[in-house]
Image 1 (cartoon, rainbow, N blue to C red):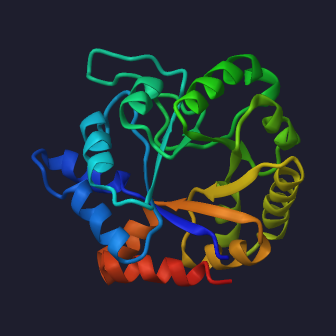
Image 2: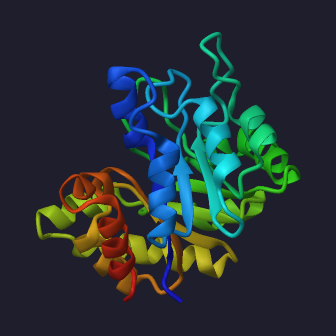
Image 3: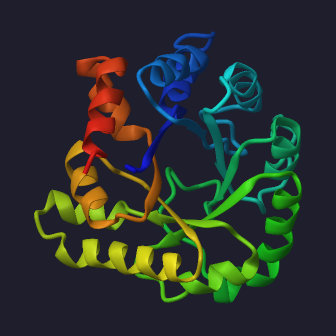
Length: 250
């Protein structure tokens, strides 16, 4: 079975927020992606509301058809604020996503750029993982591909890891990706050996995705937004989603 594609619609919200108003619609974009064959929709609401907002999360939850997974990414330690961000746990309790992907991003990061340190964060992570799982959410932890702590994730109660593929994608662009791909493979194998599912995401496109999917037969899901919506500007969203699905047919 090829890995499932979850389309991250954050970029649609970035474009909408740059102008204000309701267009383009994240719900409409999600609808097109699902009709084209996407198995899931991903969002990453941030406390500064720079793209996906809590009301988008609620609207997407309300429209998703049965069988289409909802994945919410975020930092579980970012507190609620007066801008309207309720905190990741509260938002999950309200919308009950199929999967929560915990990411150690800070407010000043443009995008996620590193995974968790289990040695440093285990004490804080274990109770929040338990809280999300009590809601019925599958929990995935964002991890660096070269981390030596992949197997330790299982002891925290998480279900999956998401391999941070930014370094692999960057190396792929330089045509010097052998070590970076090997790191991803080692991470996938360590996760599988520990009984964890394997997701991947960050800077994946149709070219590097095809190679990654072929090298990671245990890959369960990829979440892709930036490159996918870049391609969709030229080929259209429906056709682009189908191209990414084809790239997963390794």
